[in-house]
Amino acid sequence: MPSGEDDLIARYFRPVATAPGALGLVDDAAVLQGQGDDLVVTTDAIVEGVHFLKDDPPDTVARKALRVNLSDLAAKGATPTGFVLTLALREVREAWLAPFAQALGEDVAQFGCPLLGGDTVSTPGPLMISITAFGRVPPGAMVRRDGAKPGDHLVVTGTIGDAALGLDVLKGGAAAPGSDTRARDILVSRYRVPQPRVALAQAVREHASAAMDVSDGLMGDLAKLCAASGVSAVVNAGALPLSAPARALLAERRVGLEALVSGGDDYEILCTIPENRLGPFTDAAARAGVPAAVIGTIEAGTSGPRLFDGTREISLSRLSYSHF
Image (cartoon, rainbow, N blue to C red; front, side, top):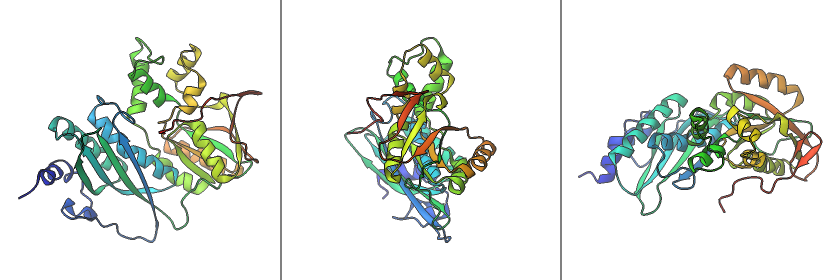
């Protein structure tokens, strides 16, 4: 007789797992066919109260869980191949699971990253979703953090700081834009539903000397990239790509620049591009419809990245979000 877990999987997730290698989710494992490529593996968990709020809509929770992993793959120059899902639930509720599974299925189709299997467990604690995602790159082509060289341009996609402001809005903080519902919705959407730059993966693979995704804060993640590469960096505050709502909050002095560059949850690509590759990279980004801004330069040294407003260095009390 099928267990409650079997019924849950069959009802909500078997319809999503349409890849042949998923075997209809009736086995204990899945199959990824070898194609001569390197397999890139990444894993991220999102936890209620840490990465999403208790009353966040279940469809946005599903999308965030998958997309934060797709963001990692894109920054490595990898094409998504599939993922496995671990879902820790306090209870089984149709009203939560149905929209969660539907949104997951929509993202599976949109990004070409099929569900291959996973596990469902009961927990007395907060809701937790963990995904391990797989991607492919040609042999030896994965873009690492440790390839940045002095003279490389520092490039970031999209806009920075919106997600941190969105969380602040949801918590009723200083960034809550009052009656400006459109600005509020933009910021909250950036927090709840990241936009992984999957369309830029090939350009990153072909042109970047080093890359990673921005998940814990631009300056903190840049510090990690610089440490891995044994270099330093200078960032031009005036060149940081900011959304209209973020610029308005800065102008009103309701938030400071540190909140934007250190807040986390951006899920944009941070990469270093050699001078002779910058033109082809920005052309590729334009064709892919992904905004990409040059925000600074890689320099020799090991002092860590520095942020400048003109000739004035901006001192930051923290560089990134930290779990511990």
